[in-house]
Length: 200
Image (cartoon, rainbow, N blue to C red; front, side, top):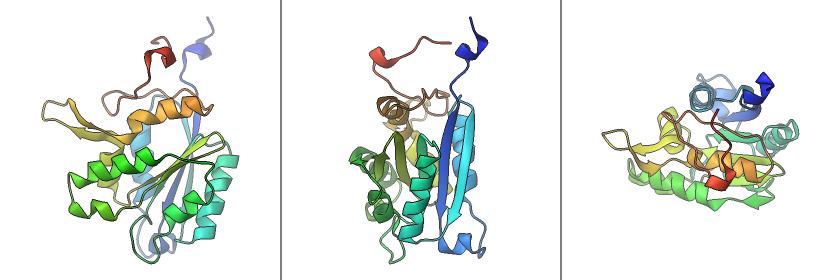
């Protein structure tokens, strides 16, 4: 058997940090390192990252998302710009490039964050599909990024509330992307039995 057939499929992932101040060097961006670190731990697939650090501008955000999808990113994660402030325009820019909306992702992120802070209801994250790519807006803080992706665990390590990433691999299957394989100790991806491939 070909050894390459036993290796997880490579995947290209866009990671976008959206911040006026970080993009102009007022402070150091924390979003891109947080996203890259989490994804590297969570996935067994070889990952090529396409990082972008851009200001809170609708047209610039939309153009960046289109660029990353056109570059072959099966998954694009953004961080920042999802609150109610005047400069928070990431959801609008994301919806502007959408072919389909996936409202369950935003609903679940707010549900998770509400376990920590009542201001989670002010978050406006959205998720959309464009072509063969899934685009998800995440919160701005590294701690909140990990919480929404992983979900909440009980003291014994069992899953209390599912994180949103548990549904990402199967979603990407359904839109024609690569077969993502998760490290279960970080985040266990869920697929129906009919969509599972044999264990390696």
